[in-house]
Length: 461
Ligand SMILES: [Zn+2]
Image (tube, rainbow, N blue to C red):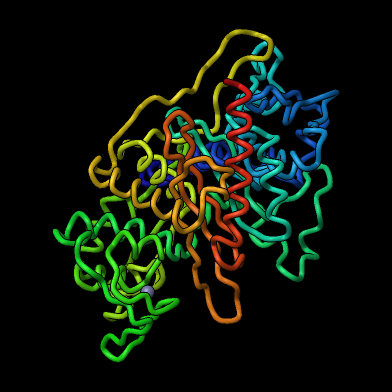
C-alpha cells in the first residue's frame, strides 16, 4: 500500500511538472514569438513569404509596402532616413516604430499561426500616419551630422506632422554598426523624441516661471538682481552676463539665470518638487501608449546652489522632447492638452473598413491664467529676443535653451514653442545634441520646419 502511494505521488509529480513546463513554454512563446519571428537573424522567415499592409503618410505617399513578398520602402533615401524611427525597419530593433507596434495588423501575424495564416484570416491592414514625409525629410537633412530630434504637431487636432530622430540610417542600405568606432550611430534605434531625456537648460525656465507665478504673489512685479556671479553657501551660480535689476518677463526673455535660481532657492526643495510633479515630472508619461523616457526633477541631495541650478534647468534635471511638446501644446491652448498622435487610421487594404484614430479628448493640465501669462511671455521673448524673421514673420512664442553637458563638450541646443495664432495651430520642440547655443543650432531647424509646415498649411487651405 505504501509503495502504491509513493508511486502515485511520483506520477502526480511528473504530470504536474509536464503541465507546468507546457504552461511555461506557451507563456514564453506567446510573450516572445513576435520578437523571434521579427528578429533580424530570422528575417528569412518573414521577408520572402511576407504579405503586408502599406504604410502611408498624410499625403498618401507610400512609406512601406510589400511587393512580390519583399518589403519595400519609399523611393527617396531622404524620406527613408527621416521616417525610419516612426515606420521601422522590419525588425523589432525599433520597438516604438509602427511596424513593430502594429505587426499583427500590417502583417497578419499572430502567435498561433505565425505568418502562415490563410489569406482569409490574415487580411493585412494599411496604416495611415499623420506625418508629412516630405517635411520630415527636409527637417532631418537640416541636422547634418548632428544627433537630436525635431517634432511638431497640430495642438488643436493632435496630429504629429513632423517627427525625426538622428542619427538614422537607410533601411535599404543598413550600415555595419559593429564598425562604428566614433559613436556616430550611438543609440541609433532610439526614437529620441520618445525615448531620450536631455538636460533642458533654459527651456526649463518655462516651468520655474510658472511655479514662481503660482506660488510667489510678487513674482512678476519684483526686481531680480543679477551681478553675473552669486555665491550661495560658498558655491558659485553664474549667469552669461551681468544683467543688473530686471523683472520676471525681462529676465525670462534675456534668459538671465539669477531670477530662476532665486525662485528655486526661495521656494525650497519640497515646494519646487511638488509643484513640478503636478506638471508631470517624475511620473510616467505616454505617447500612443508608448512609455516616454522620464522627465525628472530630483533635488533631494542638492546643496542650496544645486537647488538654484535646478531652477535654471541644470543640476540633474532631465526633459523628454515629446513630453515638452505636450506642454507647448497645452500652453498654446489655454492650458488644455490635446494628446499628440501619429497613427491616423488603420484599415483593411482596399476596403472602407476603417478604424479611425482621431483624438479629440482635451484635458486641462495647466491653469488658464498661468498658461496665458506664459504664452505672452514667450511671445515677448520671440519678438524682442529672437526676432520674427526666424519664422518668416509668423507670430510664434518660443524659448531657447543651451544645456551644459560637461566639460569639453558643446552644449545641447534647444528651441521650443508654438504659434500665437490659433488659425495656424502648431507647437514644436527641437533638440540638437552638442549643437552649441540653442538659437544657433536648434533655431534654424525650428525656423525651417515651421516655415515648411506653414507653406503646406496655406496651400491646403
Ligand atoms: Zn543674468
